[in-house]
Picture (cartoon, rainbow, N blue to C red):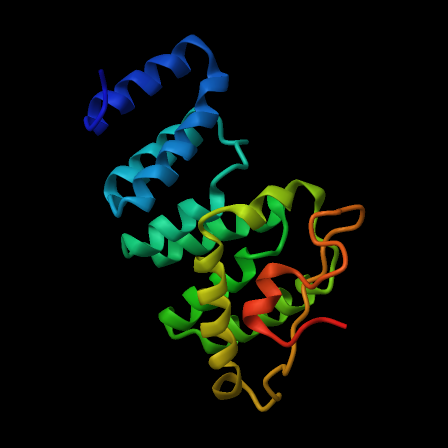
Length: 191
């Protein structure tokens, strides 16, 4: 009934939120869907709608930040990325923040954020992130991190890290006995 009509879908989703506030968590997922289709203005509308109904929603924050970047709202994207780091942890958001700072021309902020991102890779990945490794957006993270790493030397005198290993979170059997699939594309196998 609503297929292809983003305005009608948004109205229906907001009506659902009026009936039960928990429906607000669906709006960021819809925002991600429209983002993946390249409909960035519509995507932003769904993200904003969900977060307006329930500002405590944590899902989709870094996607919302990416959407804001695509819509040219870089400063606002940094703020959304900061919220995501507070609620969901460093990875991959600190890398995306560093890339955004580079686009803004803020090299020192990019460097400081990149250092936080690299330090975050040394920490165990939270259990809630298990499903994220299987998400279609993983190549976006990989691409963003490669861009940041390539820009490391121009940012500072520190050498480019030769190897970054992302180990599976404790208790995970998903990657038992092998390096993380993400690390495969970024660095030498972890040992």
